[in-house]
Image 1 (cartoon, protein in one colour):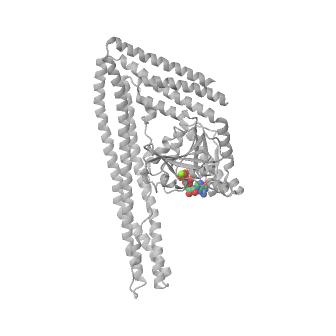
Image 2: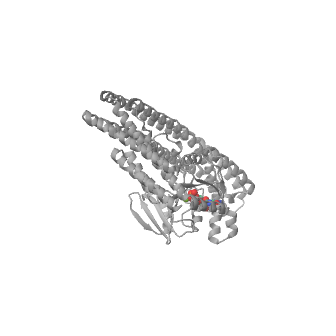
Image 3: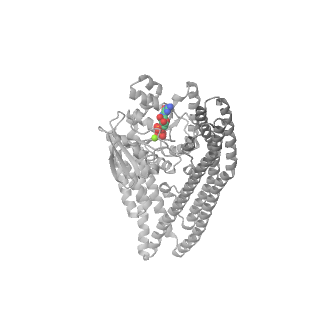
Length: 585
Ligand SMILES: Nc1nc2c(ncn2[C@@H]2O[C@H](COP(=O)(O)OP(=O)(O)O)[C@@H](O)[C@H]2O)c(=O)[nH]1
Ligand SMILES: [Mg+2]
């Protein structure tokens, strides 16, 4: 097995080396970058087992179980913001890799300083990855377990990080949990993953929350959804409780371990890694080389085709394209403006309803406080005041939570409606550009879609999200001192008077939060839109400039260039043939 693996690996290395030479010769950035990426990924024979899922599904808890130690921060509010790689090592160590490449050794107990949103808000410390070495008894040393931040969180950068990791995963453990049902975000995410990763272990976590009977229903329900999304009817869903599993392992409590249901998953994982790790690695390597080959082919074919267009025609087409780009830019501006005005409407809607919210809350809280006062009216003055204040605080928070939920839902609905409208406009625009490029230059710019996500944009990366912090009740006004002789009704009145002030302030907080998120999200959208279009312009420019430069050559050299590309294309075709022969072995 090992020998066969090395031999095949060597053959694939040779093919990639040759492709690298060819691509260097052609000097196209998108291709060179991809070659480098694939080379890095497969040079060290490391198998990436990536744990994915929406945030708070229990990913970190599960990895802690595998490690047999409470190492990764769990239940962190709101979430982790960098990926963590765990690998086997005889000693325990941890280090932080910064975005600029700097590395720093840290104490393993300090992980939360770097990977929690709370201690590293929006990743101001510029942490890219955290690497951990730990002597855990799982599988081989060349398996790296990757803990990803959750998708579907309020922070877009987190979603992106999890997303970027799909490409690098050799196998995936995808965690669902029994608490809330499968979300739209999870469905979309899973659909992306199943397109690119062949081996996915589906796990249903937190089964300790439910009864056997409920479990049966949830498993059936979730399995059907997964089947539908992946188009695979042969789906197994492992029901586990990562929490019980971890506790069981730490406390050496067989009962808990058994109840956690983790054993079957662990066995299957182990067997899979022992038996198929190398096969999977080779398959993925082959797949990636194939991808580069088709990039190269498209490029050479395009380039040869460009050379068949007479110079005057090409120049006229470039002019026509420049005109078209002006149109695109206008459309782009329009999308931005309309999006922003829709976003403003969400806020206006909130403002218009604000008075209504206030009244509603005021009525509800007063009613409840009044009723409550009735039940404690016989208490002494001090007790009465204390109890009333406590009750008041609780009721305000309760009522606010309800309202907040309602506001969130409404805003999210309006937001995603507006956004999906503009996303589909942007996608249409991109499709149009592709069609125009094809018509004018006979070029297919699809080949670099992998690098830039040029094709279509999915909507969940721009969730508005919503996470207002704890509500604020100003403690100061509870400390007022009442003149001794005043009591009873007066306390009640004072408390009731505060209602409006409290409601005002907290509505203000919700509004501020809404505004901030809307702005952030619209900015992200615009940034991405600009980036996508710019990438298309850049790639085209690179291709056309190359073609134009060749036109400046004399006839003989021009023909020579043309046949040079034809030769390279021939070589690429040969490599493709060689690759398919390796696959058959
Ligand atoms: N009841 C229960 N809680 C769990 C289980 N697994 C994880 N949790 C809790 O769920 C929360 C989120 O877990 P965490 O591992 O941080 O999720 P992650 O965001 O996916 O990494 C934490 O408070 C965990 O203690 C489980 O099997 N049962
Ligand atoms: Mg986590």
